[in-house]
Image 1 (cartoon, rainbow, N blue to C red):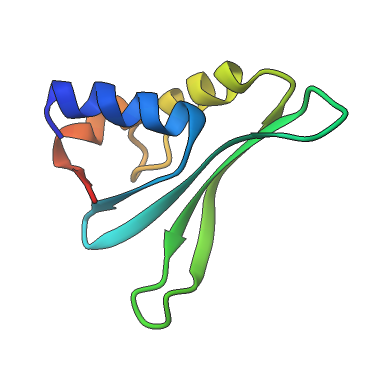
Image 2 (cartoon, helix red, strand yellow):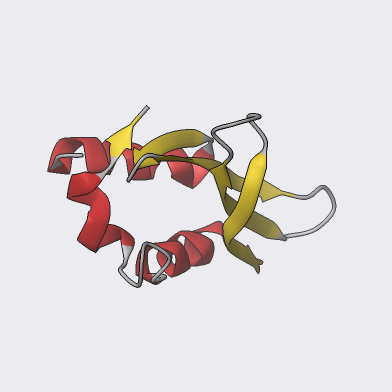
Length: 95
């Protein structure tokens, strides 16, 4: 993704869902969800199975009372072969 795509992608996952391809794997971003009656947000990133369309693994989870906290934690998490989102974003394709 180039810088303009990264900005649009981050805006999208801050409030909704998205998918990216990185190193022949597809990742699904389940954007922050606020639960009724509370100020609880969660944000999950799943690596999807290429064979059956299912979930292979959850690669990132965050549960906090503020959705921006989850987004910041995601951006700094070293879930991409020990690197952060910022380090691998140029290798990603938003699909």
